[in-house]
Each structure stands twice: as structure tokens, then as C-alpha cells.
Image (cartoon, rainbow, N blue to C red; front, side, top):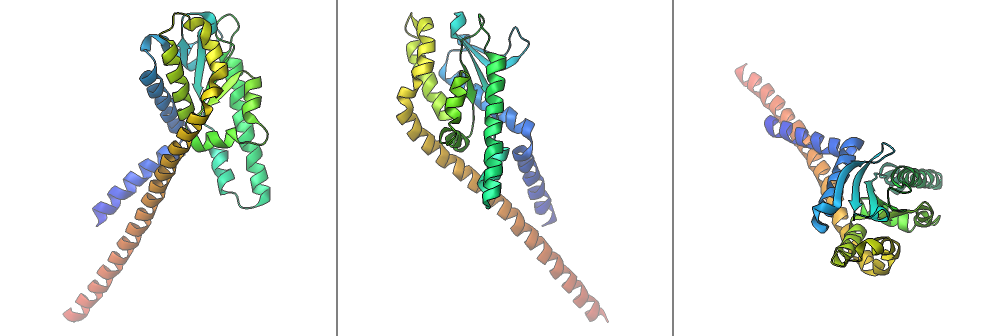
Length: 248
């Protein structure tokens, strides 16, 4: 029993650390972004952890060979205040964390805009990757038009499903010799495939909910094992007392 308890405690601690540690979550998001890009585009168009002339390093530079077709893609994690917003019960907390969440999003948008859009070196647009479909939908449906404000900064915010659709579209046009001229137009007009991407986003969100459910169930398992361990120890104590009484 003690060995099983120790094993579960260790596993739970490792799992919880992964969820709580910002650096680990950020690295996990970058890995997911890289896998998605490598799956959809030929490697010769992808430059990972590319350092630009301003000294800033972007997660990936999609490079189609022309200055105006060098598109920076960077993963940003904006989950903490979103989670607090979701868990808020009072109007005051909702208002507080909603503002903090919006600030998180726009802070990252401004950073991407200033760091990864360089006249004469990159395309005049860049992409911000948000790995959570739920967070993305919250940005998309925000009443203060976070998506519009990001576009004003020449940043396109995407979720995994949105980026998947975008990359598929780019992949189709790669067969076209005029790709370099069309890359910017594709980025701007990608909203045309929004309906299909929206449905995919909803389905991906369902998977994310199931993942969160598994996390909660794992916590419940730990609580149950703690109780079992406690009761087992009590039984052992009782048995010890009885044994002493019999000896007397």
C-alpha cells in the first residue's frame, strides 16, 4: 500500500508541476507549434528559433524566399488569468480577471508586433499561436474586439485548428509558382475558411475538456488513495492494540 501511494504521489506531483510551471507549459506549446508546422509545410520553408536583425528570436519564421513572404509565428501562453476568470464567481472578480486576461493578450500582441515585424526583412504581418481552443474562442468572442485590435497591430491570432487550416491553404498554394506574391493575400483573406475552422475548433475544444476531466479524475484518485492509506493505518493501529490485549 505504501509503495503504491508513493508512486501515485510522485506521478501526481510530476503531472501537476507540468501544469503549473509556466516555462514547461510554454515549452510544451512551442513543441506543439513545431509539430503542426512540420506536419503541414516542407521543412525548407521553416526556420525554427530564427534570430532576426533586431536580436529577437522567433519560434518559427515561415520563409517563402521573398522579403514580404517571411512570416513570423510565435507561441504565446495566456492561460493563468483566463483560468481565474473562468473560476470567478463574483462580478468584481469577473471584471478584474477579464481585464487582466485582455491585458495579457494585448501585451503579447504588441510584443509580437514590435519584435517580429521588421520593414525590409519580414512580411508586414505576424502570427500569434494560442494552443488552447477555449482560450482562443474567448479572445475571438471578446466584446472589446481583441482580434480587431490585434489586426491593427498586424498580428493574426490563431488556435491550433485555425493554424491547421491556414497551413493547409498555404500548402495548396505552394504548388503555384506565384506563391511569393500570394502569401500576404492568403494571410489577410484566411477568414474565408472561418466556418470550417470554427467547427474544427469546437471539436478540438471537446477534446480539451476531456483532458481537463482526466486531470480532475486523477486528482480524485489521489484523494481516494490518501483516504485508503489513512484507513489502512487506522486498521493496523487497531490490530496492534488487539494483539497486545491478547498477549496480556
